[in-house]
Length: 436
Ligand SMILES: *[C@@H]1O[C@H](CO)[C@@H](O)[C@H](O)[C@H]1NC(C)=O
Ligand SMILES: *[C@@H]1O[C@H](CO)[C@@H](O)[C@H](O)[C@H]1NC(C)=O
Ligand SMILES: *[C@@H]1O[C@H](CO)[C@@H](O)[C@H](O)[C@H]1NC(C)=O
Ligand SMILES: CC(=O)N[C@H]1CO[C@H](CO)[C@@H](O)[C@@H]1O
Image (cartoon, rainbow, N blue to C red; front, side):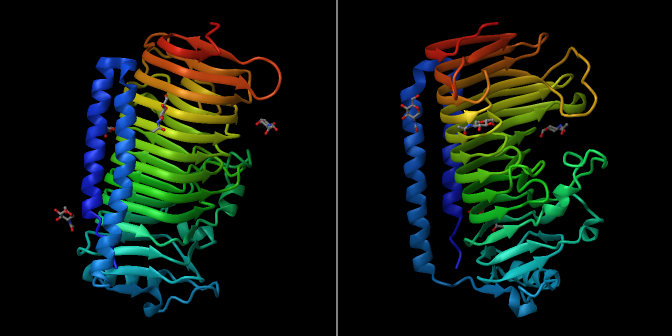
């Protein structure tokens, strides 16, 4: 019962390739390109609908040919607080080696310790969660590798779906975070679900909640479609990013609702061709590119589009954050059609990012930011500074395009824009205007 992902994956590739070339031509034609872009977005939208139909058709035709492996076949019990890890391992080995779909049955809660699902697998393998997978609560179980709970690695042409829940059970981890208890040392906590070096991957129709630290991370993946996710953790939970993208190319994240204690989406070094569309975000820290350039490192991020996002009550809206002393670039980035409601820093470029106890000394080098487009961004700011371009003095921001950006104060008072070391070009409305 697998929704043959080859065709959708190929389509994704085509969408992303055309997206990439559109970004290229955008550079030449600057803001005259809105019509072409609108067509592109419309096309990609229709395309998604079509591929879904094609997938359904394939499903109907192929029936249950691929076969399934139920975790209960290997002794998973669910619900009694017992440890189902081994059953999951055995079920995975069978599913992966035979080309079947691992099934987590509905209505039960399976407790699982840190686990790695490794490929490569036979064609037609998959992973379908109907019920709930919940993280083993005792933190001792994570001593060997504190940064991961569930890992999928080295799998191709693969879908994770099912409509069920993956629950990181993160409360104890949050209580022991140095951000919550200042007396404790800062240590990493597990990412709930990590995808490493996966190709042609689909992750859809899932709830992921209460991660120990980040919820989902895509690392060194290629051709990924993420859709229809609901990601939730309390606003107060530390570092619980929704979707983290690192060293990944050609990834489409669509139709997802993300409400957590940190970035809804964070896109960092080595990522290229990232499209996030129809994202509902908040509470949380907004949609971020970065942080980049930490520890004097070199960064490369390009061709990122965020289209149709709705942010409510977040601490940032759309943000680019880089540390002083870094190098490399973040370029060809578009933030389009975004609505903000009571967002504290709706538009922010922060090249003096410093997320540590000690203050960060001034340094000469910086990650170069260029060709960043803000178009059709409307709504309200919870703070006075609605727009902040705090760019590097030695490496100013170049080619920053602002069109039809209107941000008003949420309450009474004024909204202002603060602009340091930025060269921007604006068309259409741009409110508030830079005062510095
Ligand atoms: C994945 O799909 C591609 C394209 O359809 C195919 O060439 C490749 O062999 C497949 N890989 C696996 C591991 O099934
Ligand atoms: C940044 O990404 C590039 C390309 O993926 C990689 O070669 C480099 O090591 C990365 N830098 C850091 C600091 O991770
Ligand atoms: C707006 O956000 C601020 C700060 O986050 C909060 O104190 C305030 O209650 C919010 N106002 C509304 C109307 O939601
Ligand atoms: C796809 C989409 O929502 N496009 C909209 C983006 O914003 C422009 C105006 O800047 C609208 O005209 C598009 O409809």
